[in-house]
Length: 335
Image 1 (spheres, helix red, strand yellow):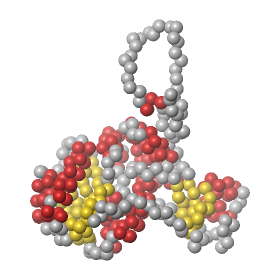
Image 2 (tube, rainbow, N blue to C red; image 1 turned 135 degrees about the vertical axis):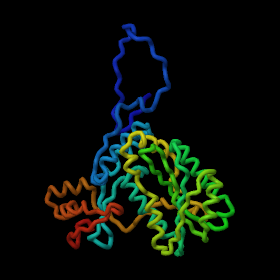
Image 3 (cartoon, helix red, strand yellow; image 1 turned 90 degrees about the horizontal axis):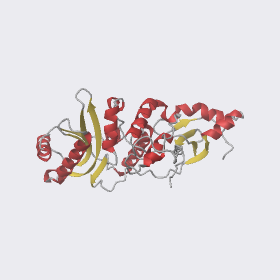
């Protein structure tokens, strides 16, 4: 029995004339594919949430289909932000927030912005107020495919953390994967940006140790961040960085990137940071739901001044937090 998922058209079935002999030889049977049950993926609906990256979103969506990523993931990506609610702060009646259903896909730029805000809040809670070090580890640029390069980078980083040189100097930290692509040479360069809580590390000795665990790479960079307030800025900059434009606009490179990063962690915590749950988003109890955006549009057609004011200011919402200011009546009717 075939299963039909909501949002996907049912499979089309061609009529079969059993009495007529086939005009072509029978084809060998193959294992049925989940994709055989669908003619087309779900529609990609553009909303205000995706207005800033509509073109790259469609390119990413098309690559997901070419790479045959799981259907539920494509459906979530396509429908991200189609249902939007407006919240009001329970104390400040002029402060509103637009929240949407999120796909939480790593290649969705608005979801990455939301993830950045979550990581920042958690780090502000966890991080000790002392200087940290920012480390970048790279491997030699080769013409290997991206997937084995990432695997090689992760294994080298694991061996580095096992060295006494590292264990004696690093209490804990987090590493974030960044992938760049050289269009002219068609080569990949995955590298790790690491935030370290620990002691001084001699650059020359660190470079030698990295060469020992990689076999051919000694390019490392490390810098002391004296102001603890800047630590989260360094981390969140790379934690949710979108794909570079030369990857998004190159179908072959984009397909390879999506396939190589499938089911692979891009944020690693270690040492005393191992148990930190950087992506946990605690429930925020400071906000009250006002209405669904569709309801506000309906109320606006009835000349509801509050709905008109909220919709007029919706375009000013902060891209990271969704917050915006609306001056409405001091005693709104939903109180």
